[in-house]
Each structure stands twice: as C-alpha cells, then as structure tokens.
Image 1 (cartoon, one colour):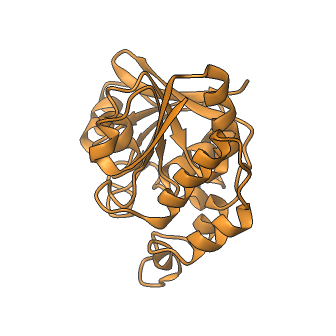
Image 2 (cartoon, rainbow, N blue to C red; image 1 turned 45 degrees about the vertical axis):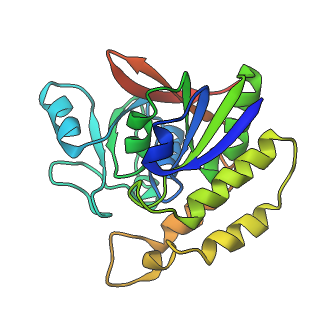
Length: 229
C-alpha cells in the first residue's frame, strides 16, 4: 500500500485511491458526533449556497456549517462539536458546508473512495482502509480554510499514517502537540465566542468512536454514512 500525505485543496485535487480528508477543527469531529447522536447520513457541499439550494428543494432535514467560524444565515447549527453534542439527530439527514473539510471532499474528485478524517475516528478509519486494502492511500490535511496548514490536521495525518503502517504513536503526545498548535488559541479567545473551549476537548478524544465515515456519491452528491466493519 502506497501512502501519500498531503495538505490543502491543491493536494485534495491530486488525491487518488482511497482518500482520507482531514478536518479536526472542526468539521469531521462535528460529523462524528452527529452520527453518534443518530444522524442517518450527511450530504457534503462546498458552498453555503449549495446547502441552501438543497433545502429549498426539500433535500435534508438539518443544515450545519460555518463561514469564518460562524453559523451562516439560514443554517440550523454551526460547526461546533460542543454545540451538536447537546442535540438528538436520530434519523436526520444533515447537509454540511464548511470552509475546509467539505471543500476537500468536493475537491477530491479523482479519489476512488473517500473517508472523513479526524482524531475522533482515527482507529476505525484506519481499520476500514486496511480492510479495503487499496493500492494507494492519500491522506489530506485540509488546514485553515483549505489554504493554510494547521497543526491539528497535520498531526492527525501523521498519526493516521503511523497507524496504517503498523506503528502505535502516543495519543498523549499528539494531544500535546495540538494543544500548542497554531490554530488552538482561538478556542480560548473570549472575543471569538463562535469557538468553544469544549470543541478542543471533544476533538482530542482520539479514536472515541468505533465507526468510520465513508463517502459515496448519491444523485451526484457526496454523502457520508457510518461505516463499521
């Protein structure tokens, strides 16, 4: 199995084989919690306007996402893991739009299979990829708005690569590196209330959830569902 680690939208576009699109802060930590709270599936779109258009056509029960960390007008929830951890999503179809993770999924058009990646589903995602045994895996850290590298996504990418190659890195070391990372301070900045300190805590619960999040195309749209071996 050939493993490539890349970053940002430019490398998402080049991803082949099985692609793991990573967004730790916060899209795919939020997605994992939403699935754990009963959501049936998540349709992923790159732009807010796409999500609003789907709602206007009666597609999706809940709109969830962010622009500059804030819930867009017309959306039900922002992109905060802490916020959605208080909600029952049983049976709900979610439409998610963010500025990094869902953009990465939309950009990875050359990949044969896509998984949503975060520390919260790390081991289950690796198990799913290994079970599929693809000839190549592209691990893409989406970073800040898909344009600037962020420590939490880069560390998650390296953590996943190590697991795929049979090594067992220290989760506490990963947490420590993320806590001192470049994107973490805003969660503790009182002038940016759209970011909750609890988001960091939830994002660093490594391999908490026993499922991967696998993407297929349904009616031309990328749709994620829980995937358990």
